[in-house]
Length: 326
Ligand SMILES: Nc1ncnc2c1ncn2[C@@H]1O[C@H](COP(=O)(O)OP(=O)(O)OP(=O)(O)O)[C@@H](O)[C@H]1O
Ligand code: SF4
Ligand SMILES: [Mg+2]
Image (tube, rainbow, N blue to C red; front, side):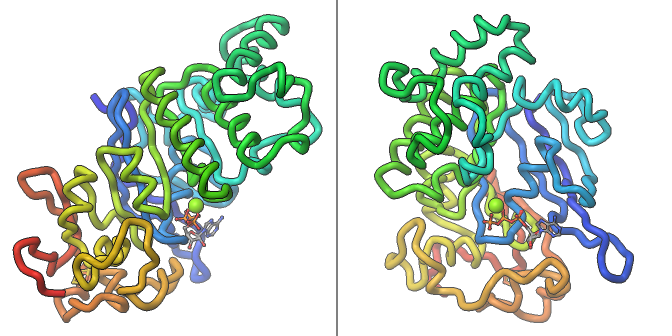
């Protein structure tokens, strides 16, 4: 059984006509115990809403439908009291912007100690010791960065280390990292990614790494799913998808048109336009307005179909890796 099983996930908001408007529209993702999965896509594709739905922290007014289960336990219908027990203890999240995840008026030590006190039943003193050790493990040596510091006394990279310490303090089985390095400079990004990868290996956590940057995913996850306009359009082993993407959008993410000139993380030079807003998605395939291969068949939404290697694509005219056509 998958550790985190997301099947046909929809996140809906009330539309202007009263009918529910899907922001995330039928996403299926599977995270095995100790495995890593990358989720990639441009801004507005629904990556964060997928993660927030998984951890039960959607903004008010949004509704989750579909299946969401942790180790077989349904999370969609679970009461908030049960979700609070799971969140932080079994499922934890690292957010993009460390300052929004930290309380500016509490010391870093007390913020890291809070989860272990609540979830692990530690005394105040034990939790303080535990927090010190976790902060040390994430690279904040207590002799230089005492737990009595406040977030504003740290750099952006150091604050992100505190956020990671809070996330891993109770030994979660699943870590969701939503663009954990986007707000950081390039050198700090690399160090924080290394830290996350090391912690995931050492603690045998399952990782859902979210990024708009295929380069980040390539470094962290052996499997990936590509999202576009609320749906998964391609998924499979990262090496295969990067070497021979089927979906025109994945090729755009790679900057692979013309072939060979792109590199992971390059801007979408090959594909003009932007992701349509949820209430402006074209019927059928939502990529149709930007796609060089679009034709009348694309007025019907394509299903996600897998090949023999587990690389799946939702496209009526996927690229054939054997032929060099655009
Ligand atoms: N509370 C909300 N109410 C209505 N629409 C929302 C809400 N939150 C997000 N959306 C819309 O849902 C879509 C997906 O948003 P989401 O934040 O999941 O995108 P993302 O892929 O994480 O983008 P980014 O890379 O910018 O973080 C966007 O079009 C966004 O405007
Ligand atoms: S289904 Fe059609 S419009 Fe959509 S990506 Fe494939 S070829 Fe392009
Ligand atoms: Mg986001």
